[in-house]
Length: 411
Image 1 (tube, rainbow, N blue to C red):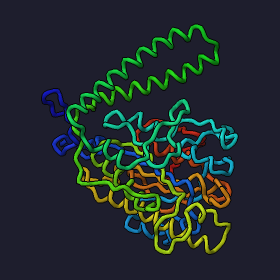
Image 2: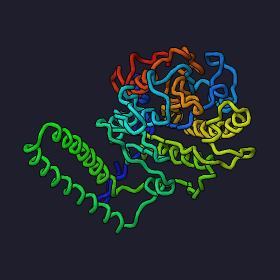
Image 3: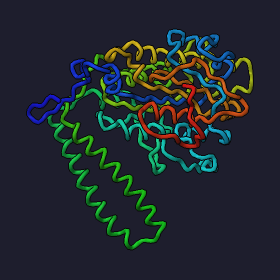
Image 4: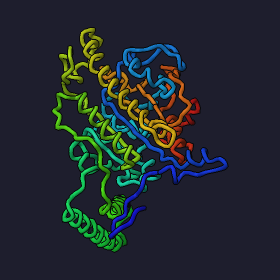
C-alpha cells in the first residue's frame, strides 16, 4: 500500500512482489488473482450454427465458432448439458447460474431460487477489490444471495463506467464518506430493534426477520467495504463510453465487454455477471427482424437466416472480448489465462422455449480445454457439474453446487 495524508492506494501485483528461488513459478501462479466472468444470453443460440459435430480440439468450424479460431485451445464448447428436469420456458432464465432444484420452479411467477455462482465466488475473492462483484447489463435478475434474494444490478453503461473510473471532487468524496457512516449507524439501530422484536414473534415471522437481518448484514459488509475504498483514487483509463440506443445492440454489447475488460484489468472487480438485453431490433446489414422475433422462428427458413445474422454478430463480439483478454500480459500469463469466462443461455431453442442441450462455452481460466465435449443430447449431463468444476478452479473446496451430481472432470 502507498499511504499519505489519510489516503491508501492499493498497488497491483508487481514483479518485485513475486517469489524468487525454489518453486517460484508455482508460488507466483498461486498469487495471481483469479477472476470470473459469467455472460447470460436469454434467447439461446441456434444449435446447428453453434455446435460442432466432431468432438475434440480439431472440431470443424461452425457459423458461430469460426470467430474463435484464434482461441483454439483456450475454450471448450459443451453439447448435451442442461439443468436436467427443468420445464420449458423463458422464466428459467433466473435459474441459469443457480441451478435451483426443478421443484422450486412452479410457474412463471413462482420460482424459489438459491444462491448463484457469482455470489459464492464474490464472497471468496471480492474483499480484495473496490467492488465485490459487478452485476451489469439488462434488468433480468440472475445474481442471487444465499437466502434466494436477487442482488441489485446496474444497467446504464455510463453510470457503471463513472462508478468504476471517475473520481468525485473532495466535497463529493467527503459527502460519500458521511453517507456511508450514516448508513452504518442506521443499520446498527435497526438491528437492535429487530433483536428486541424477535422475542415477541412466532416461528414464521422470526424466519422473515432472519431473512431481513441477513440482508442487513450483507448491506453492512458492503458499507464497510465502500468506506475503506471511499478515499482511494480510482484507476484512470483511456476510454470514454458512448450513449448507445437500443438499436445499437452489438455496439452496446461490445461496450459492456470493454467495461468488463477494464474492470478486470484494473482489478476493480474480479467477479462480473453480464446479462445481455437481446430483445430489440439491431442495426446490422441484412437484418430486418427484431432478435426476439427471429429467435421464435418456427423453423421458418427466412427467420432462421435472420437469426443467424444477429447471433453471428453477437458471437463475434464475444470472441473479440476473449481475444482482448488474451492480449493483456499479467506476470507472464494473459488476463484470459487468469479469468474463467462462461457464456450460456437457459434456452437452446427459443422458438420452442426448450431448456435441454443448452449452448455453453467455457474459456480461459487455466482449464484443460478440449475444444468440444459432446455428451448425450437426449440424456444430458448436469450443467451444475461444470459449475462445481469452476468453483474448484477458483480455489473453493466444494464438490456440490445447485443440482450437481458429480464434477465435470473433463476440463
